[in-house]
Amino acid sequence: MSNKEVFIKESKRVAFDLNHRKTIRFNISKYDAAVAVGKQRYSDLDLAKEKAAEIKSHVITHLDEYLEIFEKNAKRNGIEVLWAKDANETLKHISEIVHQHEAKLVVKSKSMTTEEVELNEHLEKENVESVETDLGEYIVQIAGEKPYHIVTPAMHKSKEDIATLFHEKHGTPEHSSPEFLTNFVRETLREKFCNADVGVTGANFIVADAGGIALTENEGNGVMTMAFPKTHVVIAGIEKVIPSYRDLAHFWPLLAAHGTGQQITVYNSLITGPKKSDEVDGPERMVVILMDNGRTDLLESDKQFEALKCIRCGACLNSCPIYKNIGGYTYDATYSGPIGSVITPFYKGFKDYNHLSFACSVCGKCSEVCPVKIPLHDLLLLNRSKAVEEGNSPLSWTLAMKGMELIMGKRALMDLSGGGMKNLGLQMVPHIAGEDKSLPPIAKESFSKQWKRNRNKNKS
Image (cartoon, rainbow, N blue to C red; front, top):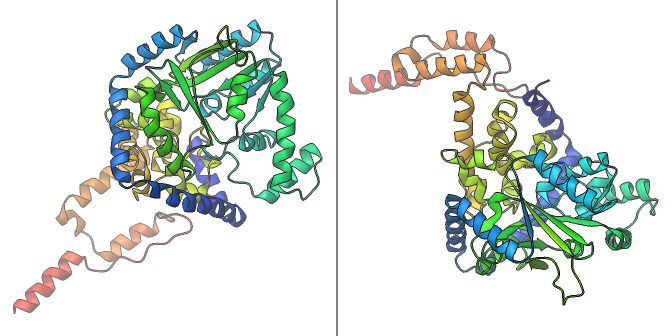
């Protein structure tokens, strides 16, 4: 089956899984309530979003300049900066670093870029243990799954599901409480932190003038991933740049409010290099890998490049009626929901992933909630147009749309046949509105004809 066929099949299966929908609706409702409170800190939220959008738009249009500024300042701080055009180059850099240190254990904080390049799977092939240290990521890792959500990796699991999983994998009591399991993971990971050779993180922001990276997290695992091992590796998408450390005062609260509803995320760190000669704690080596992996292709698009402003808050996923019904795994992509549907065809190819651009009701809620004002639903429509222009739509669909365009563009052609003929045509194409929907019969006489007839009757 093609990716599109698998997507449609999985959408139907998940949408009618009542237990799954109950779990997702419950978990997202908790986020919605918290975010609504978190946004109240702003007297003018729209103005805050305008400022964030303006900063990110400026950076994207001058991306090469800010990346060079960052590289220059980072090297001055003792950070090694490597460039990677795709996933293969990123993994090659990681392999070289791991082999240089003869590493056998790597700890990771939550990072979508590492998911993008499938770092865990790569390290496993190299006989290197890679352990997720974010609680949600750790849950999906031991379950043999991928993150379900950008911010909340295990959103699809209830507390009962997690208790059962830990009982099966770790032998914990069968109906353990969330508090018990959290403490269990804390003790388990503490040993991993102390023995890890390399720590890998992502970057919420790349700070150009400071020559460092900003890390945002709620559990402290990110700081420990960075500070305990002797080598700290950062894998960051090139779009993560912001001009100055002063901008963090604007972006950190905005990200927290839209992501989790917090006033500010618990741990916010600006990391500007390995430990200095007079410092006791911290890594001895720090490497930042600046990864492209399709981002410059997106940057060169007519309008969709605006998606590079994304700060990965997850608000568009939580508001999307499609995501809430078909779930995160149905997208079969690192980035799901509206933002994933925009960028994935550029990252993984329109031929295989253009169908994601059609997984949208065009309600516009995603654009409304976006903290950096990305017009997501407009970009999805542009993706659809691009898919058609590149010939990635089935021939039957293209011909049908051309026919509809011709007929619906001329009233005379619309009225050429009556309702009986049109209904006969619909009967020849069963399930045109989907297997679970049916269209009402078309009236024998078109509205325009009825209008003209009634108008003439009233005149007489």
